[in-house]
Each structure stands twice: as C-alpha cells, then as structure tokens.
Image (cartoon, rainbow, N blue to C red; front, side, top):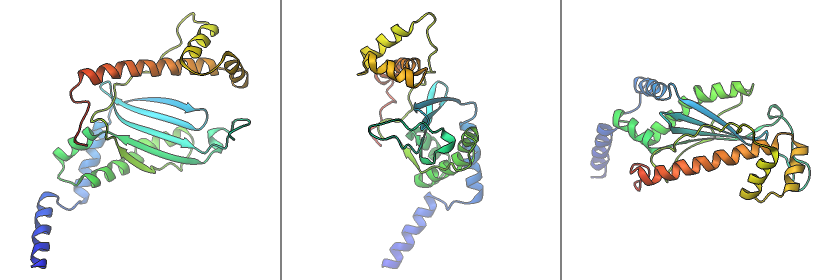
Length: 231
C-alpha cells in the first residue's frame, strides 16, 4: 500500500510540475531578459564607500531591489573607515523581488516556485549582477540570498533622485537637516569639514526619502493590488 501511494503521488506531482530541463530553463531565461528589458536603474549610496542600493524600475514601478554591502571597519568611537570600495571585501549581496514576478512566471511555466526563484537568482547573477560588478572593476560578486517580499505584492513607485534646488544656500540645507534629523549644526559642520559635500548629500537624501514616502503612501491608499494577505 505504501509503495502504491508513493507511486500515485509521484505521478500526480509530475503531471503538475514536469521535471526541469534545458528547454524550460532557456525559455525562462529568455522571459526574464524581456521582462527586465528597458528598465531604469537608480543607484543610491546609503553608507559612504560600503553600502549601495540599485532599484530596477519598469513603467514607473520597482520590479527588483539589489543591495550591496562591503566590509566596514569603522570603530564605534573613532575615525571612520575611509578605504575606497576597491580595497574592501564584499560582505553581503541581496536581491529582493516581489510576489507578482513569481506569480506571472508560474502562470506561464509549470515549474515549482522554489525552482523559479533559483533560476531568477542564476539569471540575475549572469546578467545584471555581472554588469554591476564591472562598474566596480571587480569579479567577485555573487548573490548571497534572494528574498521575496511578504508585506506587499507589487513594488513601490520609483522616484528619481532629486536635483539640488537652484539658489538654495548651505544654511537652508542645514536648517532642513536640523528639522528632520538629530544632527546639530556643530555635527553638520564637523561632518562637512571631514567630508566636503556631506551636507548637500544628506539634504538631497532626506528630500528623496520624503518624496518616496509621500508618493507611496498615496499609492497604498489608492491601489488595491498593493497589499497581499496571501504571502
């Protein structure tokens, strides 16, 4: 009886999910290439010299999010680690995707979800991640993990990084930072002396973050497809 049950279960599983083969893999690779074609990529450096984020956007909405973190030896108290990226080892590289991507693929390809995620990881390493590592002049990039968001089904609306407003003064930027962070004016002056351009970079980052939050808060309220309780 046990042998019969195992045989029946195996037959039913194979009916629904045929074993992967080279033809299916190639079809999935081609589909991913078309899906990521003509995407806009927004790069953000969120930790000086050792933290980078790449947002892959299509039709105004994020379809994937890549995070690259390099080794950092900054002490809790003391001078910051200022080594250039070329001198740092890679700490972690993570790719985040949304359930809608896997759902679309499962509607086309009769393959298990875990195997689809595995193929997405392989395809991304061979294409997009390879292009990005060339930007850094390296050949040691690989994905440590691929994660599918559970809190939302579709990606956020993409907001391009802002340009510095014409005519704005350093004092005005410092005033805005003072209102939106815990930095004191003395803190800002010390950071700017240590790293010229720090005030402007933080000001633009705060503007960008505020605009992304505003736009996507509206999207969550008005888009019924945003939240998905099934994941």
